[in-house]
Image (tube, rainbow, N blue to C red; front, side):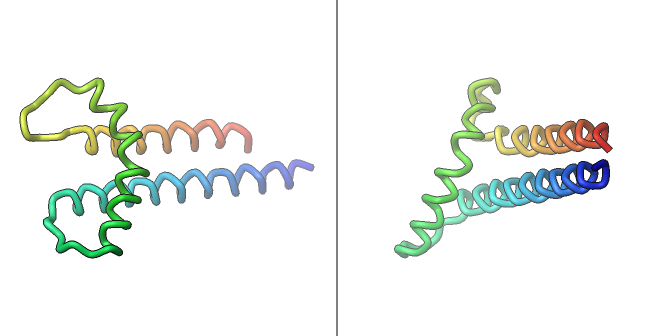
Length: 98
């Protein structure tokens, strides 16, 4: 019984790590594509729209909290830091089930 619970906790930890790492990577790609002036292409437009739809709701949470800093948007940096904190917190909680 405990082996099954330990295996489930390990799989949950792996899922949390992979999900947060992948979401952080998506945010980084979104940041890079927002800096670059890409030529118009239907495929690139769809990719940029997907990145916008996935990242913008999360980053908007931090834009509400941060004061306006002119042309510099610090919300992605704060969002990535928050993802790291959430990752460590969830792993710490899941470790207590081992």
